[in-house]
Structure formats: structure tokens, C-alpha cells
Image 1 (cartoon, helix red, strand yellow):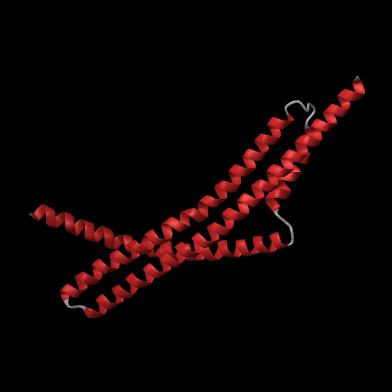
Image 2 (cartoon, one colour; image 1 turned 120 degrees about the vertical axis):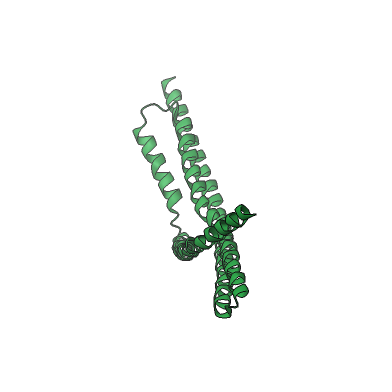
Length: 193
């Protein structure tokens, strides 16, 4: 029985110590969501002007590929590889926001349960001010964690739509470039014969 009480005390101390990293993590998430939201606002404004940098960079990489490529035979493979590389980078960029969608509510829940345990301990000792302070912390961490998760989810929906539109545009550009190169090769063959 004494060992079980020691294990309970250890878990209580451990969970109490986890409160500080959880609260710090929530603060970092709040600032990160605000920063990411500002970046998305900037990207929205740029998209309204027609400046989609992923597509512009892809187009310039294809132009570099065409000018630096001596042999046109394997050009379709090189273009496909460049397209896959760009698509992979775009999908990886979604991982950060998806991480916040999952971690925000989890940290909020941890920030709720840890202070509630401390509040129950304070209630058992009759320390009402400490209990009230811990309950406030418990509820605010829940709200902040859920708010970060909801904001991140809404941003991820918009970002995913943008990524899909960019990929379709890049596929169209790649197809156009390949068709143009095939036409040039067939014209050269006609000139030879």
C-alpha cells in the first residue's frame, strides 16, 4: 500500500511539473497561429494580385531546365521529377498547420486536467483562493487550446485549397511545356526528312 501511495505522489508531482511546459506551449502556439495567419493574409493579398510564388518558381525552374538541358529525350522525366518535388514541398508545408490542429486542443486538455488536480488538492486542504486560481487556469487553457485548434483548422482548409489549385496550375504548365517540346522535336524531324 505504501508503494502505491508513493507512485501516486510521483504522478501528482510529475503532472504538476508538466503544467509549466503546457502553458508555455500554449503561449507559443498562440503566437505561432497569429504569425501564420499574418503570412496567410499576405499570401491572400499576393494571390489577389496574381502573384502565386509557388507557380512562378515552378515556371522559372522549368525554364532553367529547358535552357540547361542539352538532350530533349528525357525532358518529360525531368519535368515530372520537378513537378513531384514541388508538390511534395507544398504538401509538407501543410504539415505545420495540421500539427497545430492536433496539438492545440491536446495542450488545452492537459492544461485543463493538471490544474483541476491541483484545485482538488487545494479544496481538500480548504484553500479556496488557490482552488479558484487553478480553476481559472484550467478553463482558460481549454479555451486557448481549442481556439488555436479551430483557427488552425480554418487556415488549413484554405491552405489546402490553395495547394490543390497551385498543383493543378503547375500540372497544366508542365503539360504545355511538354507539348511544346514535342512539337519542336517533331518539326526538327520533319526538317531532316
